[in-house]
Structures are given as C-alpha cells and as structure tokens.
Figure 1: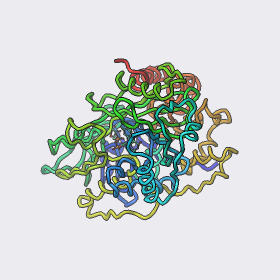
Figure 2: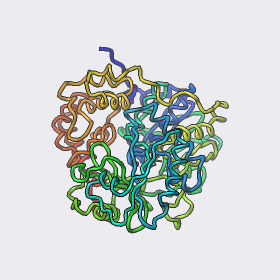
Figure 3: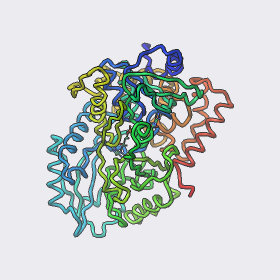
Figure 4: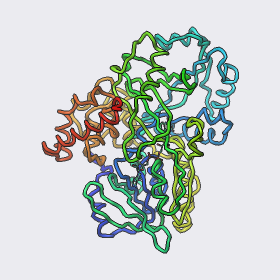
Length: 533
Ligand SMILES: Cc1cc2nc3c(=O)[nH]c(=O)nc-3n(C[C@H](O)[C@H](O)[C@H](O)COP(=O)(O)OP(=O)(O)OC[C@H]3O[C@@H](n4cnc5c(N)ncnc54)[C@H](O)[C@@H]3O)c2cc1C
C-alpha cells in the first residue's frame, strides 16, 4: 500500500524550528479560515515561504458556521452589482468543475405570493441574467400545483407559484481543509492552536508577530517580510495596533438543524419571514434539514464562541411552524444549532443588518495588510487582492490572476475507489483529493459503514485523527467531520468507537479521553444546541 502524508501533522516540529529561529519566512498569514487558507495557497504556489497561524482550530471561526452556499449572490444582482455577481458566478462554476463531491449543485425554490415583489416576470428576468452570467440555463417557473407537490405539508396560503434556479452547497470546514491541503502540497505551512498575540515592529513598520502556542503556552517572535491579517470578525484587533479605526461590524447568523424525517426537503426553499420579510432558507444538508439564517448585531465578545439566543430560536421556529403547520415541529425536533459571526465592513450600527454590503475590504497600515469581509465563493479573488497588497513587501511579487485550477485535479478516479457507491466515491475524492483511497485502505470494513442518515463514516475520524492535526475531540466532531451537528446529542453514541480511535491514533489515555469528552459536551451544549439564556 502506498502511503502519502498530508503534511498537517508536523505541528511539534514546526514549533521546535520556530523556537530555534531556524527559518526565514517571507509571509505570515494570521487566521485559518477560508481567506487565510486561500492566501496560503496563492502565496505558496508563488514560491513564498509562508506560515499560516490559527488561534483555535482550522475553520473554527466563521468558515465552519456559514449557510454552506457557494453562491453567485442573487442579492448582489438585485442591488445592481453586476461585477460582483459575475465574479461570484465564475468562481462558483469553477469550484463546481474542480471539486465535485465537495461542492454540489442544489436547486432553490423561491415562493411567489400575490402582491409580493419581485413577481414572476421581474424574477424571471433576474434569473435569466443570473444564469446567463454563469453560462448555464437552469431556471424555470413552477405553477402552484407543481410547486406544492415538491413540499409535503407546505402552507400554500397566498402562494401563486415558485421560481426555480440553482446555486451550490458545500461543507465549509472541509472546503477550508481542502484548500489548506493544496497550500501544504505547494510548500505552505499551517499551524492550528497558535495565536498571533501582537505585532512585531521595526522602526514603526510591521516586521513579524509574537506567536503563542495555545497548547503549551510557549511564546516566540516570528520575523518575516510581510504579515497578512486575515482574521475575519477579529480583524480590528491586530489592525488596531497600527490604526485605531474600527471597521468591522460583527453580525451574527444562526441556524437550526432538524431531522429530515420530521421535515423532508429535497431542494432549498426560500421563504420570506412573516415578521420582517427577510429571506430564510430551509435546505437539505448532510442528511438533515437546516433552517436559517438570522441576521443581527453580535454584541458579545468575539472570542466567546457564538451561540443562538432565544429570540433567534423563536424567529426561526416561527417560520417553520407557520409554513409547515401540519408537521407540528417543536424544539424537541432540533438536533443541533450553529451560529456564526459575519465580518461585515460596517457603515454604522443604525443600518438594518440585512442591508449592509457583504463585499470585502483590504487595508494597508504600516506594512500590515488586513483583509476582511466577503464570502466563501470568492475566497480565491479575495486572497489575490490581499496578496497583491503585500506584494511590495515581498520584493514586488507579481500577483496576476492565475489561469490554472484552485484544486489540482486528483489523479484518482471513482473507479479506483474500492466501493460500488460511485456518488460516495466522488464525495470522498472531493473532500480528500488523492488521499481518498488511502483513507479507505487505512480503515476496517466496519469503519467504512455510513453513520445514521449521514454520509460520514468512522474511517474519516481515524484518518483525521492520524493525518489532519486533530488536537481535541471537538476538532474531530465539529470540523473534520460534522457528526456533532448531525447526530442526536452531539453524536455521543459514537463515543466508545471514538475513544478507541483517539487512544490508538492520538495516544490519549483514559484521563485525557474523559477530559476531552467533558470539554466537548460543554462546547456542544453551550454553542451547538438550544439557548441557555
Ligand atoms: C451565518 C452566516 C452565514 C453565511 N453564509 C454564507 C454562505 O452561504 N455563502 C458564503 O459564500 N458566505 C457565507 N457567509 C460568509 C462567510 O462564511 C465568511 O465571509 C467567511 O467564512 C469568512 O472567512 P474568513 O477566513 O475571513 O474568517 P474566519 O473563517 O472567521 O477566519 C478567521 C480566523 O482567524 C482566527 N484568528 C482571529 N484572531 C487570531 C489571532 N490573533 N491569531 C491567530 N488566529 C486568529 C479565528 O479564530 C478564525 O478562525 C456566511 C457568514 C455567516 C456568519
């Protein structure tokens, strides 16, 4: 069996070399979300010696808590922002082509109601333009009867029909991991649980970061030619060391995860909330039905993990109960929740959160490049913008938009995977690239069985524990896999099997396992379940 390493599991060695000052870094990227990962990828492939540091786990921030839609952005086109829509659609189609199995097309039904804007004709024109910009033709009108047949028990009062179109859906945390894997393959280095505590300055100019190993408490000064602050909702913090301006308005969005047996949907349903007329999506995701999102100012400390509050829970339950009255959905049907904080480049706190623009910004202050805002879909373009801003410090690096792929096309094909389930084989290649076959080979038959209604298996847990820089149980259940969000009670039925895997792969003893279970239960109960307020 040929074995390849992923390059994620050299954390101790990298920390050793940092302490001995053995490496000369060109670039340090702070933040291990999708934007940081994209920058690491783009810098490494241009031969820049680049280190990415993430204070918690990879994708721990907003990039594991989005609505999972790699979308062109109908709202941009409806605001007349054709350029942003066009860029987003081009990136969306590119990602679909390059990472099938990780990014999948999903149908959307937008309900039409009497007297509601946009009605059928303007909506059709909008969708024609949307599809034309993407180079596809996937939209159509459904009359009331054919629309009703798609959604069992949907309240059709006032509904005149629906517009159908397509966008795409992903597993955001795995998208970050796949981009990081590409970056590491190109020579980049990524460290989780490593916090950039402050900036190092030489003659007032940013020349590095003071880094803390969050696990051991060790500090080290890392010097480099350029620092990019890609910390999303945290961006003001490092930036305020060189510029006091506050630009980030943190907006929270929360989602409910329901059993698909209680609320089955095969496409995404877009509904206008009866209270404030905001669109709320009810969509299938990883064997469950997800409802979201809310959109409100996040007034808590950003370092505290975000959680849904009672107001948001009631808001989302209200639309589910109003639109699916016969399903009698109650909070007992909620498997889990998640909340994320959107780094919106704020105008002022008086503006309605849903009217704030969602594009990104790049600032340069005394050599520190800060990038924030934007969305998953355009991560590559945002990364290129940030790298461009750092180019003078990197010796005039040329940052033209590359014509080659974001993801190398895996040499592995579905036929080479040892499974008759071809769609699942594609899913595994989308997520693990050329490692997908090795992942299956390193596990037992029993570990390759799918878990519950999900498409995940224990083989992925073993692989992640062995190869993907898992430091805590929550890394494994909430980001490397999403089992903690998809199974009842945070997936605790898997604990006996996971205990063996963690003992074998991570060399945890019983005391460590119990401490990890206690930590995980606390995180899950406070931040991935029902509100405690
Ligand atoms: C509810 C919600 C729904 C969304 N839905 C969608 C969607 O469907 N489609 C879409 O395209 N976009 C969506 N978005 C937007 C998208 O998720 C974000 O724009 C994107 O994830 C931001 O990525 P990022 O890398 O900038 O930030 P993050 O993912 O938050 O990464 C920043 C990282 O920096 C780390 N960090 C902070 N300070 C330090 C430090 N000092 N040292 C080291 N590390 C540090 C943090 O821990 C964090 O992990 C949504 C956002 C929200 C909130």
